[in-house]
Image 1 (cartoon, rainbow, N blue to C red):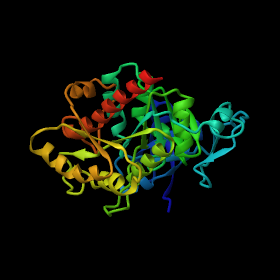
Image 2 (image 1 turned 90 degrees about the vertical axis):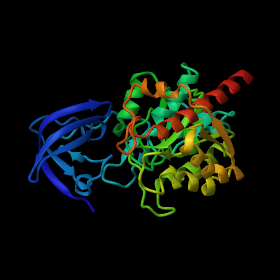
Image 3 (image 1 turned 30 degrees about the horizontal axis):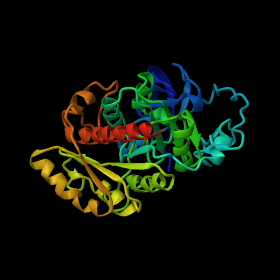
Length: 362
């Protein structure tokens, strides 16, 4: 199940909070590796490292690194004592102990213990991690000072540190904070479930809107139900249960050659059309032309369960291009798959209008 390799660090490359790229020499040649410094310490040139090379062997795109499992000759010191006892990536060799916002030793425990409601906070649900910066760009285009929290589920990468997009948005002040839920870890706030993660976004981070999406690395099999994006529908149910306002962001592509993802992806049609049992506001971008007509025809049946909100996209292209991070989905940028990013930005724009209404009523 794991392809193990020994290697020696030759050079250190890019770094961002929690992660460090390396060039590591192995018996198979030099490979690109990634170390999560909070877990394994900070490798230096000359260090012997133990690697997991599964992602390289499978030729994965998003996760195409060898992962540093340990620096066996220079183990990091034990972390300082903390009150946390919540285990993430449980019962794996790299299980990590964190302080959960919802556990008894948390300074926010008393508040989370009685919190029951999101107070109409809009929550955007998105299939892919790549939608996150586009959603935030759309929200900020409507209201530059809006407080956006990212709630990361565990359908993709488990360590939030893997995401250069999140690191860049945090540095630019685009995110009020991050919450990692389920088995995901590394956020500003750790939570056991999506439900307590959403409550923390509202009551601890004081977010105006939250965006729920998996970490980088969508998992899909090409079958009707075998994809991690079904969690979008489950997130809609959680938001509705907690008295929030679910805003569905569609996965739309004009460039994807795969029939199941061209136009409105089957991921969105399944997640919102079958998994989501509570009604949501599903944002349909006004794309115009033949392709826009195709999209409108595809989403029509979602209107049987949800409210379809047709949203203009004027000005959003400029907002996307002003983002502080590189926008890319499946290797395609804004120019190659404009419809994908406009769709996510439109959802952010609409969520920001709802947030303004909530603030006006407060």
